[in-house]
Length: 225
Image 1 (cartoon, rainbow, N blue to C red):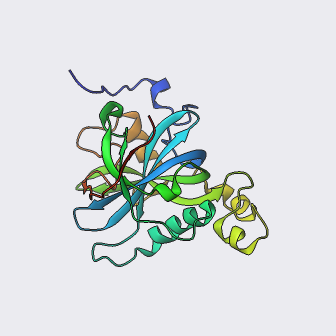
Image 2 (tube, rainbow, N blue to C red):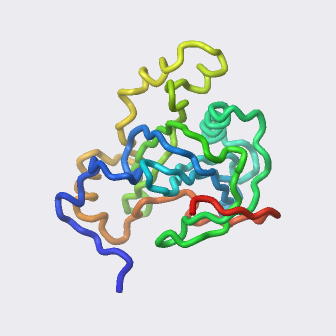
Protein backbone atom coordinates (compact mmCIF):
# COMPACT_ATOMS: atom_id res chain seq x y z
CA UNK A 1 0.00 0.00 0.00
CA UNK A 2 1.40 3.38 -0.98
CA UNK A 3 1.21 6.54 1.11
CA UNK A 4 0.00 8.61 -1.86
CA UNK A 5 -0.57 8.04 -5.56
CA UNK A 6 -0.09 10.98 -7.92
CA UNK A 7 -3.09 12.11 -9.95
CA UNK A 8 -2.89 13.70 -13.39
CA UNK A 9 -6.52 14.85 -13.40
CA UNK A 10 -6.81 18.52 -14.29
CA UNK A 11 -8.72 19.40 -11.11
CA UNK A 12 -5.92 17.94 -9.01
CA UNK A 13 -3.19 19.83 -10.83
CA UNK A 14 -4.54 23.37 -10.53
CA UNK A 15 -2.25 25.39 -8.30
CA UNK A 16 -4.84 28.05 -7.47
CA UNK A 17 -7.29 25.60 -5.99
CA UNK A 18 -8.49 27.70 -3.07
CA UNK A 19 -7.32 25.09 -0.60
CA UNK A 20 -5.88 25.78 2.81
CA UNK A 21 -2.40 24.42 2.18
CA UNK A 22 0.41 26.82 1.38
CA UNK A 23 1.67 25.32 -1.86
CA UNK A 24 2.06 28.20 -4.31
CA UNK A 25 3.71 31.58 -4.50
CA UNK A 26 1.80 34.32 -2.71
CA UNK A 27 1.23 36.15 0.55
CA UNK A 28 -0.62 34.43 3.37
CA UNK A 29 -2.18 35.75 6.57
CA UNK A 30 -1.33 33.06 9.10
CA UNK A 31 -1.22 32.48 12.80
CA UNK A 32 2.34 31.49 13.57
CA UNK A 33 1.85 28.76 16.15
CA UNK A 34 5.59 28.51 16.68
CA UNK A 35 8.85 28.48 14.67
CA UNK A 36 11.02 25.37 14.97
CA UNK A 37 14.76 24.96 14.57
CA UNK A 38 16.94 22.36 12.87
CA UNK A 39 20.62 21.93 12.07
CA UNK A 40 21.64 20.65 8.65
CA UNK A 41 24.18 17.88 8.14
CA UNK A 42 26.69 20.55 7.23
CA UNK A 43 26.06 22.41 10.48
CA UNK A 44 23.94 25.38 9.36
CA UNK A 45 20.98 26.46 11.49
CA UNK A 46 17.56 26.67 9.83
CA UNK A 47 14.27 28.08 11.13
CA UNK A 48 10.97 26.83 9.69
CA UNK A 49 7.40 27.65 10.67
CA UNK A 50 4.44 25.74 12.06
CA UNK A 51 1.37 27.79 11.18
CA UNK A 52 -2.40 27.81 11.09
CA UNK A 53 -3.70 29.01 7.72
CA UNK A 54 -7.50 29.20 7.46
CA UNK A 55 -7.86 26.48 10.07
CA UNK A 56 -5.28 24.16 8.51
CA UNK A 57 -2.24 23.59 10.73
CA UNK A 58 0.87 22.86 8.69
CA UNK A 59 4.65 23.21 8.61
CA UNK A 60 6.14 25.69 6.17
CA UNK A 61 9.69 24.71 5.30
CA UNK A 62 10.84 28.09 4.03
CA UNK A 63 14.63 27.83 3.75
CA UNK A 64 15.31 30.49 6.39
CA UNK A 65 18.96 29.68 6.98
CA UNK A 66 20.14 31.68 10.00
CA UNK A 67 23.76 30.54 10.04
CA UNK A 68 26.05 28.99 7.44
CA UNK A 69 27.89 25.71 7.90
CA UNK A 70 30.82 27.56 9.51
CA UNK A 71 28.56 29.15 12.12
CA UNK A 72 28.71 32.62 10.59
CA UNK A 73 25.37 34.43 10.06
CA UNK A 74 23.67 33.81 6.73
CA UNK A 75 22.96 37.35 5.54
CA UNK A 76 19.83 36.58 3.53
CA UNK A 77 18.15 34.19 5.96
CA UNK A 78 19.03 36.28 9.01
CA UNK A 79 17.59 39.39 7.38
CA UNK A 80 14.27 37.69 6.65
CA UNK A 81 14.09 36.19 10.14
CA UNK A 82 14.84 39.60 11.62
CA UNK A 83 11.72 40.94 9.90
CA UNK A 84 9.65 38.39 11.79
CA UNK A 85 11.28 39.29 15.10
CA UNK A 86 10.61 43.01 14.58
CA UNK A 87 7.00 42.41 13.58
CA UNK A 88 6.52 40.25 16.67
CA UNK A 89 7.78 43.12 18.85
CA UNK A 90 10.52 41.00 20.37
CA UNK A 91 13.91 42.53 21.14
CA UNK A 92 15.77 39.28 21.69
CA UNK A 93 14.77 35.69 21.01
CA UNK A 94 15.59 33.19 23.74
CA UNK A 95 17.32 29.88 23.07
CA UNK A 96 15.04 27.12 21.70
CA UNK A 97 13.25 24.75 24.03
CA UNK A 98 12.16 21.18 23.34
CA UNK A 99 8.56 20.77 22.21
CA UNK A 100 6.28 18.37 20.39
CA UNK A 101 4.68 19.33 17.06
CA UNK A 102 2.37 17.29 14.81
CA UNK A 103 4.65 17.61 11.76
CA UNK A 104 5.56 13.99 11.13
CA UNK A 105 3.92 11.75 8.53
CA UNK A 106 0.11 11.97 8.68
CA UNK A 107 0.41 14.53 11.46
CA UNK A 108 2.40 12.32 13.81
CA UNK A 109 3.96 14.07 16.80
CA UNK A 110 7.63 14.93 16.46
CA UNK A 111 10.08 16.29 19.04
CA UNK A 112 11.66 19.53 17.83
CA UNK A 113 13.27 22.62 19.40
CA UNK A 114 11.02 25.68 19.11
CA UNK A 115 11.29 29.44 19.62
CA UNK A 116 8.47 30.04 22.06
CA UNK A 117 9.12 33.81 22.18
CA UNK A 118 7.63 33.90 18.68
CA UNK A 119 4.61 31.68 19.33
CA UNK A 120 0.96 32.56 18.64
CA UNK A 121 1.64 35.57 16.39
CA UNK A 122 -0.56 36.75 13.53
CA UNK A 123 1.68 37.63 10.61
CA UNK A 124 1.57 37.93 6.83
CA UNK A 125 4.23 35.83 5.13
CA UNK A 126 5.46 36.03 1.54
CA UNK A 127 6.22 32.56 0.18
CA UNK A 128 7.81 31.98 -3.22
CA UNK A 129 8.03 28.63 -4.98
CA UNK A 130 11.50 28.02 -6.36
CA UNK A 131 12.45 25.52 -9.05
CA UNK A 132 15.98 24.32 -9.70
CA UNK A 133 17.88 21.37 -11.17
CA UNK A 134 19.93 18.83 -9.24
CA UNK A 135 21.55 15.82 -10.92
CA UNK A 136 19.27 16.28 -13.91
CA UNK A 137 16.09 16.38 -11.84
CA UNK A 138 13.74 19.30 -11.21
CA UNK A 139 13.49 20.30 -7.56
CA UNK A 140 10.65 22.27 -6.01
CA UNK A 141 11.01 24.17 -2.75
CA UNK A 142 9.37 26.95 -0.78
CA UNK A 143 11.33 30.06 0.13
CA UNK A 144 10.13 32.62 2.66
CA UNK A 145 10.92 36.03 1.17
CA UNK A 146 9.54 38.34 3.83
CA UNK A 147 7.02 39.19 6.52
CA UNK A 148 4.47 41.95 7.11
CA UNK A 149 2.27 42.93 10.03
CA UNK A 150 -1.15 41.48 9.33
CA UNK A 151 -3.46 44.32 10.35
CA UNK A 152 -1.87 47.12 8.28
CA UNK A 153 0.68 45.22 6.14
CA UNK A 154 3.55 47.26 7.59
CA UNK A 155 7.07 46.03 6.87
CA UNK A 156 9.67 45.73 9.61
CA UNK A 157 11.36 48.91 8.37
CA UNK A 158 8.07 50.82 8.48
CA UNK A 159 7.40 49.58 12.00
CA UNK A 160 10.80 50.78 13.21
CA UNK A 161 10.40 54.15 11.46
CA UNK A 162 6.79 54.53 12.55
CA UNK A 163 5.57 55.75 9.16
CA UNK A 164 4.18 54.74 5.76
CA UNK A 165 2.67 51.45 6.91
CA UNK A 166 1.81 49.21 3.96
CA UNK A 167 3.78 51.17 1.36
CA UNK A 168 6.40 48.47 0.79
CA UNK A 169 3.68 45.82 0.64
CA UNK A 170 1.92 47.70 -2.15
CA UNK A 171 5.19 48.11 -4.06
CA UNK A 172 5.87 44.37 -3.83
CA UNK A 173 2.36 43.24 -4.79
CA UNK A 174 3.34 42.59 -8.42
CA UNK A 175 6.00 40.09 -7.31
CA UNK A 176 3.95 38.08 -4.81
CA UNK A 177 2.62 35.40 -7.16
CA UNK A 178 5.80 35.02 -9.24
CA UNK A 179 7.71 31.75 -9.09
CA UNK A 180 11.51 31.70 -9.30
CA UNK A 181 13.38 29.54 -11.81
CA UNK A 182 17.06 28.59 -11.57
CA UNK A 183 19.49 26.60 -13.69
CA UNK A 184 17.93 27.54 -17.02
CA UNK A 185 14.45 26.23 -16.18
CA UNK A 186 11.50 27.94 -17.82
CA UNK A 187 7.91 28.32 -16.64
CA UNK A 188 6.38 26.08 -19.31
CA UNK A 189 8.88 23.31 -18.58
CA UNK A 190 7.96 23.33 -14.89
CA UNK A 191 4.24 23.39 -15.68
CA UNK A 192 4.66 20.25 -17.82
CA UNK A 193 6.63 18.59 -15.00
CA UNK A 194 3.85 19.36 -12.51
CA UNK A 195 1.18 18.23 -14.99
CA UNK A 196 3.03 14.92 -15.35
CA UNK A 197 2.81 14.40 -11.60
CA UNK A 198 6.40 15.36 -10.77
CA UNK A 199 7.98 12.25 -12.33
CA UNK A 200 9.90 9.76 -10.23
CA UNK A 201 13.46 10.75 -9.53
CA UNK A 202 12.64 14.41 -8.96
CA UNK A 203 12.24 16.32 -5.69
CA UNK A 204 8.64 16.62 -4.51
CA UNK A 205 8.12 19.64 -2.24
CA UNK A 206 11.78 19.99 -1.25
CA UNK A 207 12.69 21.20 2.20
CA UNK A 208 15.87 22.60 3.64
CA UNK A 209 15.13 20.66 6.82
CA UNK A 210 14.60 17.23 5.29
CA UNK A 211 18.18 16.10 5.91
CA UNK A 212 18.65 17.84 9.21
CA UNK A 213 19.29 16.69 12.72
CA UNK A 214 17.37 17.84 15.77
CA UNK A 215 19.31 19.50 18.59
CA UNK A 216 18.13 18.73 22.11
CA UNK A 217 17.11 21.24 24.76
CA UNK A 218 15.89 20.89 28.32
CA UNK A 219 12.25 22.00 28.30
CA UNK A 220 9.42 20.27 26.46
CA UNK A 221 6.01 21.62 25.48
CA UNK A 222 3.25 20.61 23.09
CA UNK A 223 1.96 22.93 20.34
CA UNK A 224 -0.74 22.63 17.74
CA UNK A 225 -2.86 19.77 19.07
